[in-house]
Image 1: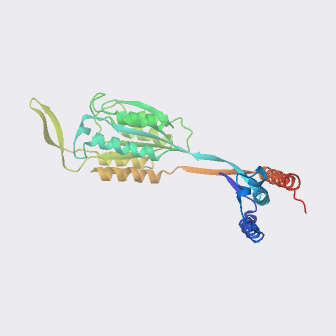
Image 2 (image 1 turned 120 degrees about the vertical axis):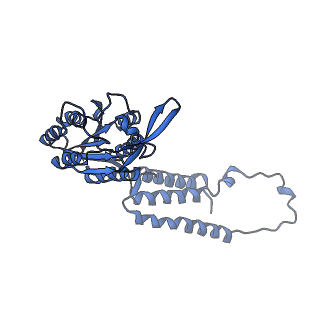
Image 3 (image 1 turned 30 degrees about the horizontal axis):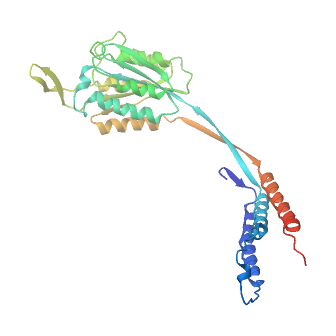
Amino acid sequence: MSGVKFANPEVLWFLVIVPILLVWYIWKLYKNTTSISFSSSIGFDGLKSTLKQKLRHLNIVLRLLAISLLIVALARPQSNSSRKSVTTDGIDIVLAMDVSTSMLAEDLKPNRIEAAKKTAIKFVESRENDRIGLVIFSGESFTQCPVTIDHSIVKNLIKNIKTGVVVDGTAIGQGLATSVSRLKDSKAKSKVIILLTDGVNNMGVISPETAADIARTFGIRVYTIGVGTKGMAPYPVKTLIGIQYQNVEVQIDDELLNKIAKSTNGEYNRATNNKSLEAIYKKIDQMEKTKVDVAYFSKYTEEFFPWAFAGLAIFMLELLLKYLYFKTLP
C-alpha cells in the first residue's frame, strides 16, 4: 500500500462491519449448538473428520474477505506517481586563494592555509546549486579548476592545496585577473570572486586596481578576505636543529582589499582567527543566495478495479461453495 491514497477514505470506516459480522457468526454458531446423550461413545471411536467438516467455516471467511475487498474498492485506492522539476538561477563562484609561504603562519590554527582550506570546503558544500572554480596564487597565479557543478572535484583540489607550489610572493592583481578570466564569459545570473590573501601585493604584471576594473566591467562582484591577526604572528622556520618559531609582523593591505571590494560592489572582511574566518564565509553565503524554484507534479491512477474484481470473485466462489459443495438438505 506504499504510495497509495484513497479518494474516499471515509468509506473505510465500514470495515468495522467485518469484526461485527464475525462476532455475530460465532454467537449464532454457539447458540445453535445442540447435544444428544448416548449411553456409550464406543461406536464413534476411530471416526475421522471429513474434508467438508474441516472446511465448514470457509464460507464465512470468504464472505468477510469479499466484503473487506469491496469496501476498499469503494474507497477508491489511487497510486501516486510524482516528479519534481527544479529550476535554479545559479551563481558562478571562483575561490582565489593565496598560497604564499606566509600562509604557514600559525595565528590561525593549525595555520592560515589549513584554516582557509577547511572553511572553503564547508562553503563549497553549502552551495550545492552553484558552479564553483578554484584559482591559486602567490608570485604567479593559475587555475586549479574551472567553474564546475562537480563539487567533489573542487573539494579534493582544495584539500591538496600546498604552499610553495609556485613562485613565492603575493601577486593579488594576477590572482584576481586569472579569476576574472574564468568568469568573463559566464552566462550566470551572478558572478562572484572570493579572494583570500594574507599579504601585500608585491609581484605580478597586472595591478590589483586594474584587475578590479576589469572585474567590474564584466559585472563580477569581488569579496576580499584578509587573513591574519593584528600585530605579530608565529611563523615556523626550518633550522639545523629543527623547526623554530619566530614572530613576524602581519602586513595586510586592508585599504587595497577594501578598495577592490567596494569598486565591484563586494565587501572586505578581516579574519583574525578561525571563528571570524568561518563567520565571513557564512556572511558571504547569506549575501549571495541562489534562487531555486521547485515545482511538484503528481498524477493519480485509479487502482480500485483489482480490489473490486477480487472481492466479486471471492463472493461468487463463496456462493458456489454454499449451494454446491456445502449444500444442506432441509
